Length: 303
Image 1 (cartoon, rainbow, N blue to C red):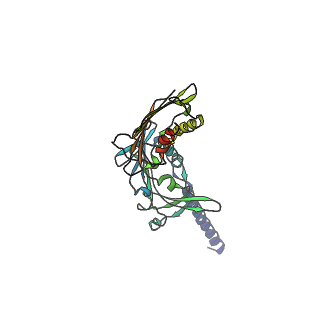
Image 2 (image 1 turned 120 degrees about the vertical axis):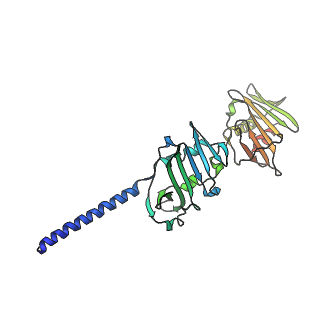
């Protein structure tokens, strides 16, 4: 076999080798370009979260019909529907930005261990649709971007993805609860009845004018006060109390169901616990300047 023949054979073998490497590299690259998370959200029945911020206690988001509830430690609450809807696009598609590491030795560095990351498990009935660990994030100034590090729970590989995933998933129970205390159209309200330790006061609208007994109320002041009850959200949740209410406000009007807000003395000095018939099972904590002031002190000061 002459040198020319040997050269041709060598060239052919080299070509085959390079082509194989290229195809293999391309295949690996494409695998990294695939969606890390891809869930058909129409099949999602529940989402289990184990957030680092809540000491990894399980939080269960569960769907019944079109409504979500959130539960922890056997207690169930109405969920913030918009908060849950906001995570759905990330479940539909989260693409790999790059492969970061393939070894368990790097898990701690990127905070994707059981003791450092936030686990997210998405279920469709008894079937697991996604199961992944959200680790730390990096913020880059120029150009501005946020990169999060994610690992599929049963795999070693760590991937970088776009977005602030820890802000999305690493949140405690209260972040997922419905916070809507009242949501009334101010234009519909025509009567307010305050029951206090000092007695009862009734504010009523007649012919477009608000009054308390024989006294005409300031129209701008009452309009500002009534807007309080539009999209009023709890800032801090409390626990149920079984003592008599200290203050009660009954809100009545046109094209609306009556709403009763009750205010109870809290355990600490200057603390109040409030409930709303528009949000059964919800208890709000207030200090002197919170809900208590906005609903009762500000209202009573109009007379």
